[in-house]
Amino acid sequence: MSYEKISTTKEASPFVRSGWINFLDDQELTHGLTFQWNKAMSQVAALSDIKHFHGMIDRRLLGPRYLQKPDRSFAVFIFEGDENRNLHCHSLWRISPERKAQFEGLVSQSQDRHSLWKQIAPAGSCVLRINGPLNGDGIAAAIYLTKEIEMRSTDRIVFSNTFLPSH
Image 1 (cartoon, rainbow, N blue to C red):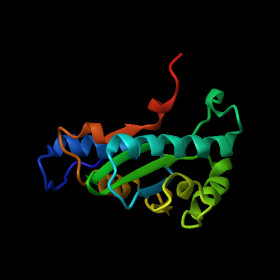
Image 2 (image 1 turned 60 degrees about the horizontal axis):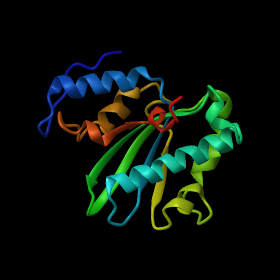
Image 3 (image 1 turned 90 degrees about the vertical axis):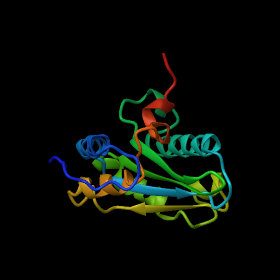
Image 4 (image 1 turned 135 degrees about the vertical axis):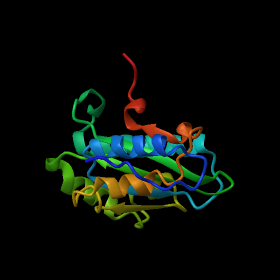
């Protein structure tokens, strides 16, 4: 499916944003998570937390040698908001069907003080959405995720494969 017409609200080129929407839609992403810290936080520190969370998820899904396994989860993270207030991160994840229930169990208890996200960001929240991508509407999820995309804001988009050690 292709998405060609969009309305833009900032300085984004319609072609840049529609390219991101089409790219995300092609990734067969299955889950959405939104992360909040509920405190002032730099994007660098927030990215470190996201990287830690992603590693914790893969370790629980794949075991202690998760870095060497080819079927790690894949995610796209898009940061929004201001570092001085309301910095948050939307993400779309690709989780294999055989690990779907386990993944949902790991992230659905995110408000519990013992949850993985609360271990990283005690004041934060992590909201699981099993909507657009799972219901065959990846474009709707991609449109929402790219709502603040600007031509100069690609530093706010991070792919989980950048967390892997280089060989």
